[in-house]
Length: 246
Image (cartoon, rainbow, N blue to C red; front, side, top):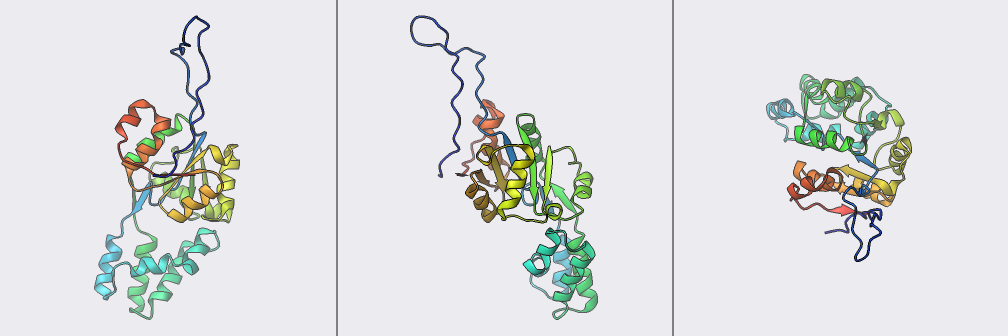
């Protein structure tokens, strides 16, 4: 277990009476964080790749071939930095598939991958909506230029106070600048930010900047990580062990 995040001491509210000090029943405990910075894909949103898998089997390709090509840095990074369109991304995937399948199969696979439907983890979304009632919530994502349309389609336009999108900012995780942009946007120092992501290198970059990092695995782990913000009842229900990195 890594070192848990530092929780500031509750403000003193002892009554001036003889004997041991008595805490006032209404004394408030300062929250451990002022902002939660949360990834989108792999935490909130997941893609349906069944059609891609079906087309790969029909073409005699190993499962995951199209994904590996689509997310290769030379194809994926220009998209995440806002330098190419969805159509150009699909073209690059089809180009790299072409030596292994027919041109029609390459185009079909590229289209199925780049236009795949997605769904949300409703339990994670519910937790984040509750968190937003306690502190500032920022979505920090290596995402496409059409992220706003995707969030609207998923019913998530009101989920967070801010969205920091790599394709809009021109910088992507794990570059430290995107974390700085997120903290600056809400006026919160890094050490008062909790960062949640499903990729270890992104969590490591956040902790290097002074944030508290949580590697996302599932909704129960996230519930445990957010328990200090959500209250005592949530803390009792969040029984999954979670590693905090500082």
